[in-house]
Length: 415
Image (cartoon, rainbow, N blue to C red):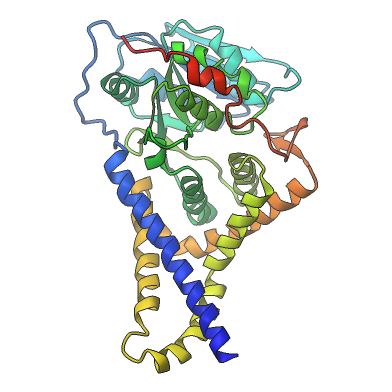
């Protein structure tokens, strides 16, 4: 029995070390492949830069809509318009937005009153807004996000320099409450495990994604993939858009935007759990096997399992390997203490939040358990107060299905 426990403990420790080694590799690759957009960087613009239409969807966003819109209006990019969509809000969102946009040129406030069948609320709001745009480029910004004044200039300049049609950003998370600090970095890290930015930016990889907090896309590319119509029922339409852009060979960049984009996603435990349940389940396309895989991974990575593995490993290891028994536990400890801190710094948040990782990991186990139950019971999607009876926790069309289109059409090129 002792040798069985030793073998199990060794395998768990090797798994933990391997997990963190892969995360370390991903961090190193992201430093080399993922540009870090910085406001101070000089950016070349053509003499007559194209009009960028910035679209902000807002559903009951009275607390932050003014700051979001002001951050757009303060952009130093010389040619942009702003369209805010009041998406069936029942609070003061529309009134606040109307006051901010009053007497401003190239600004519109439109309202969505009803939601057609088959559409999620955000997708329909964005589709409705696009019909009012005039820009050669479209920028989509969530109402809980803020742009630094040089963000549009930096993103368009990066797209122009790389001759690509879409740029999306990872944000700096604004974390104020305990639960935000404990959970947001862990959940964001899980998203990066599913979609490593370095692989998104690798043309040889078929992994693709986008972040709906902010992305900039050329109008020609947006039209080429059918806009939001092909992703109208997705709970993560941004990922669907990114996948279609890359599959069509249009050129996609996932950049670190911690210096030019900030976001405060959720403010309390309930919203964090429900929000990330939706995001992670849809990101895995509701595949039960994949959900169970990551549920198992995070159980193995949890502190109780790690302590049990050490309890089984150390007594036998010290006897069989008297001079080297400590190398495996030490490797685990070093990786566990350095990689989360490095990741937090990459997010633009304090590395002290890494100390709360064990809490975040426990809550990830809880979220994956919730997702498992929702998939097994085929529950309806609930999002921002709306229950979508036609959209359920079952596989959807997250990946492009019209493969012939994506393989035979010529991608739009930048001028």
